[in-house]
Length: 211
Image (tube, rainbow, N blue to C red; front, side):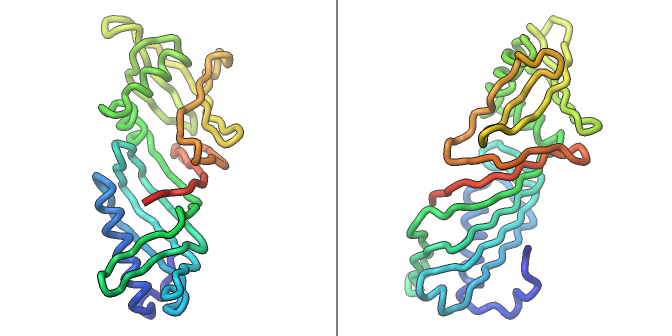
C-alpha cells in the first residue's frame, strides 16, 4: 500500500523515489500515474538498506507488453547510494512481488504487436490448430480466441482456459483439452496465481530483477 505520509519523508527517501521514477520512465515506452513509496529511515538508507519499496503504475507499455495496472513490492533492498554524484545502485538483484492487470484491449495489442505477434501465431497453431491469430475477447470472465488457416479462410473461434501450474502459465482449448500450450516466460519469474475477474486478467508473481 502507498503511504499517505509522503510529505513527512526524509530527503533521502524522496531522492530514491525520484531515481526510481526516472528509471521507470526510461525503461518503458509509456507509463502513467506512477506512485512510489520508500519505507525506510534516513539512517537505514545511509547504511545501504531500504526496508520496503512499493510501486503502483497504470497504462504501461514495456517492450510492447501492455499492462493496465502494475503493483510492485520489494523488501530489504541493498543499495549503494553515492550522494556526491547523486547516483543510486543496487548491490544485489532485488526480489520483487508483483501484481499485473490486463484488459482485453491490452492483451489484443500484445498479440498483434510487432514484437509479440509470434506468440499469437503460436497460440493459434497449438491451441486452435490454425495458422493466423485474428482476435481475442474476454467476456463473462472467459477468454475466446479467433484464428484462421489463412486470410481467406473462415475465422474459427474457441474458448480458452487460462491456468497456472508450477509457476508457469498455460492456455488450454476448453473443448479439446489436449490442445494446450505453456506461455514462454523467463525462468526467474514464478507465477503464483492467475485469474480472470471483472473481465480482467490478474497475475500474481515474483521475480528477481537486474538493473
